Length: 61
Image (cartoon, rainbow, N blue to C red; front, side, top):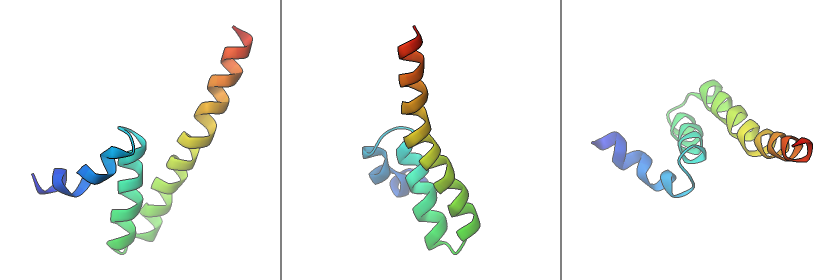
C-alpha cells in the first residue's frame, strides 16, 4: 500500500506518463541517476514520438 501512496500523486498526470515521471523522480531521489535517465528517455519517447507516429498514421489513412 505504501508504493501506491508514493505513486498516487503522479497518476494525476496520466496512467502511463505518470508512472514514467514517478520513475524519474523516485529513482533520482533514491540515488539511481542511470535508472532515472532510462525512465526519462522513455518519457521523452512517449511524449514526442507517439504523437508524431499517430499524426503520420492519421495522414496516411
